[in-house]
Length: 213
Length: 348
Image 1 (cartoon, chains in turn blue, brown):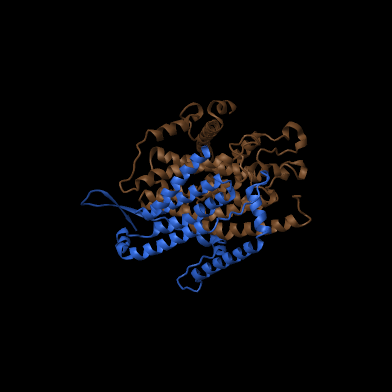
Image 2 (image 1 turned 90 degrees about the horizontal axis):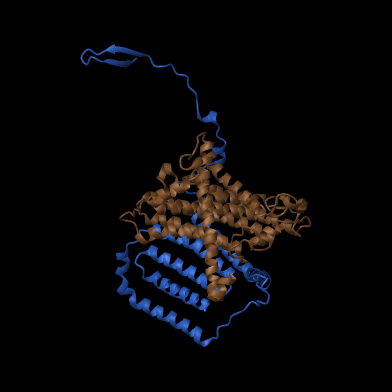
């Protein structure tokens, strides 16, 4: 009973926040609702006893990817009015695309029976993450390696695209040089004679006036 | 628990019991944190050759409560151009994330709120959420100072989370489990029959150092506290907050400090295990007091660094995270893997 209550609570939050992602006027609020959607779906996954996937969803998507999203959206100067201008013009095309995607999703659900590969949970002492690890590195080791190579490629390409060491404006610091700085190279003690001060009386003001020579 | 389950049925009895446990966990933690702030003021005082807080109560012992009442009775100010709901939610998010992590942290083999199998992953996941409180607080105040502080904090926390994550991978490889209690148990055997020499921090010394220093950076404590660098950006991300909301930020910061110290003690310093060999009778037996002592030593370190080191420059912080810690942890993971499959392995 309690499980059902929690399921409905999380589902309602998930659906509302997913709707708010596209309905919210402020882009920051959209991103925040997307984060809420991720967190609630992770809660739903935990209720299915897949704690590894649920926690990885939070760790990777909410903890890292969405932070960068939020970062970028905060930096952007988005004018809501200009974004809304093209609404009626683009509506027919967007509606068509939306309907196509919806139809595809319905067809997948209706025509094909959903096949769920179930990891045999015979023994509770072996944790979910342990079993998943076994599967990934024995049965699916080639796909895992392939995926990691593709990700590495993406990483290298992203760095190569953004890094321009030949740029003339780039300023680099030589850390070793900074660390090797010693006090004697920076400070020079100079011996100075103290200034001589002569006191004369200013007749008009009638006060002592100091004049340095 | 049985009485409650008898009175309210199995499910609701369990829920109410867990709520009571949560209160029993959070209240001592809050009091510990309150006295941690007092200890910090006194220790900083002694390190600066002054007396520190000594006016309220005997020896100043009631000072934390005086601070608390001062915060509570202050007026809550919300800037006119602030984004109201997000502004109010930010301190709550940061404190909730700090407290929720404690749900899986064991204080002894039996004293744990929930003993989950993926405990380590849970701690990593929830503590990565704390950054939202900071970045939202920085944004919602609609002030340039707080925004700069929020941006700095985000970049810093994301950078150091990676190094911390890799340090956790090292612990994971050695112990072969994500369960925090089992990780501590794994350190109870080895050289000299489960004494200080069999704890993780010796074979994993680079990870230990990286975790310890990244922990200071993650909690935005000095010398990594550029996000609240008061000489440049007033107070950073919480510059617009006053009264109780400000107190929530402070509470979250100290709860996170205690959390990082406890995790370091559990993962690398053998948790509740005794530093003496198990054959020494009562001295060698595992005891929760050992965990408390270890946590207190690590917390003393936090305060000590603050009094000792000047604040890092921002590019130096980034360089340390990405160019020093990340390669160190990556290389040591390879070394550790090779060590574990070689005949010299000490983890069989």
